[in-house]
Image (cartoon, rainbow, N blue to C red; front, side, top):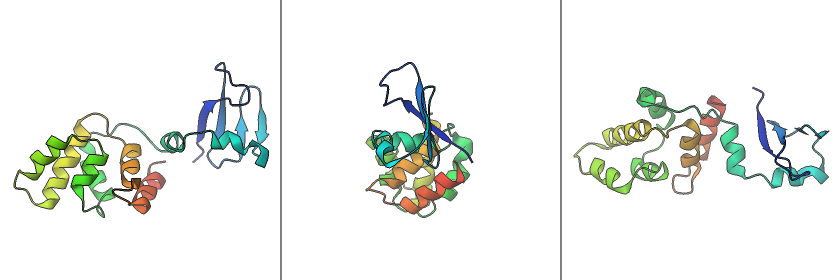
Length: 150
């Protein structure tokens, strides 16, 4: 797929237009510039927040409770549901409530993911970001989500 990443033009440092960086980082263009990336232009890429690049290259369509099965399949390798919940910004007290519910680990994970999905802020992007965090450290799983949903 062909994706582009938009950001404020760093050469002009104005807000009246934006540059676009192609998905493969081979071309930067805007209304005033159109050039292949050269070593001298690498500062264009370095000035970008890596999380912004990441967020714009993955499908960030909101997920809902209907997406429980695909999310469970994508996170099958993640056993630590509690810390994944923390990375997904589920409040601590809700995670403790799930934990104290007397459910097995699989059901706890399902309930945690449903809470996240129904909160209205769930996306493949936020899931992949949580999986890449040092606490979860499932970069391969996150990269698979990026491939599947880009």
